[in-house]
Image (cartoon, rainbow, N blue to C red; front, side, top):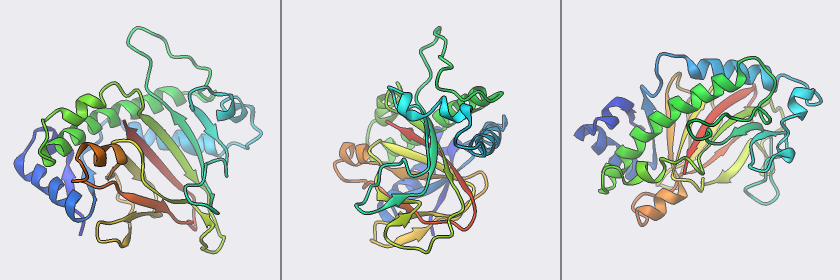
Length: 260
């Protein structure tokens, strides 16, 4: 049983919510979050943009123009099988579109690495803004749960210099399960914290007890993973969450925000 914590309760520093987060981090190593979205439907619009973008043929100029191989900062489209394997001998069956932080206030954002789809950049940036606000509340809660100063983690991630939003497409994969053919092989994230929204099951998490657990695709709920930076900053009190993605019988989208 993994608890689900209300984002607003975390933001307000409510004692019960903080205690629940602390217990979840120590006993399972992850938890669910509800109430993390505003009423603007930014995630719904982003999912629709993902369906359009990933539905394009790989040779489509709108995909080719944003191929990550042309990028200096890692922003853009990574084709299927382009993801680096986290475990030797594995092949990641996933394609992605990545973006980093928006430019500082007063500076225009270059359209060079955004696909030429109507509303794509605006919708994805709205999703970024929503998740950034939610993440600030979660980082505050994690700081309090670890016995740190209230803003210790949130302030260190506030610039979003290393934060990233990843839009992931796991196409239908009928290949038999094997050690080599996977969605993404087992790893931990190097950042401080990760928020994940998935449209279908497939994500598996390594709990503190050493067992792998399947994560249901809760509508509107986020999965909160603990990352390597957090493990270091808490001197191992909280441990980074191992995770992987198995092959899925149907197409699966995942919106992932890394805070670093």
